[in-house]
Image 1 (cartoon, rainbow, N blue to C red):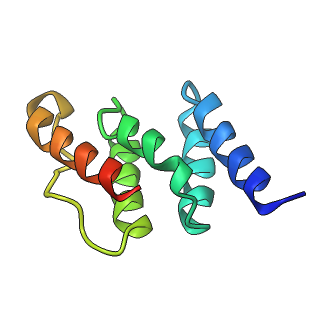
Image 2 (image 1 turned 135 degrees about the horizontal axis):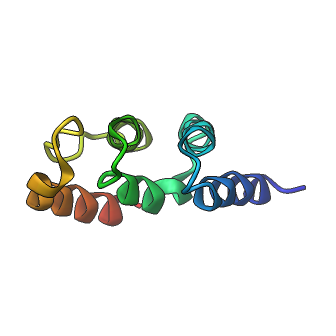
Length: 97
């Protein structure tokens, strides 16, 4: 089995577990620790999650995957009040990946 298929499997698990915050967190943590950049879109999606824990994980995950820091974003704040910051972080992450 190639390393790419492991990466895809971990990212697929994260994607498929959108209704299960615990499983999503576990799979995202695995992808981030392994440096799998394919998880970036899921991290961007989770920046606007209802779950503060997932927002914190998403922003921290982007910081961990890329060498430089993303634009400022407060994952503890309500995502509805952070639309501009979220858009800046998403654009930055897409350019980096």
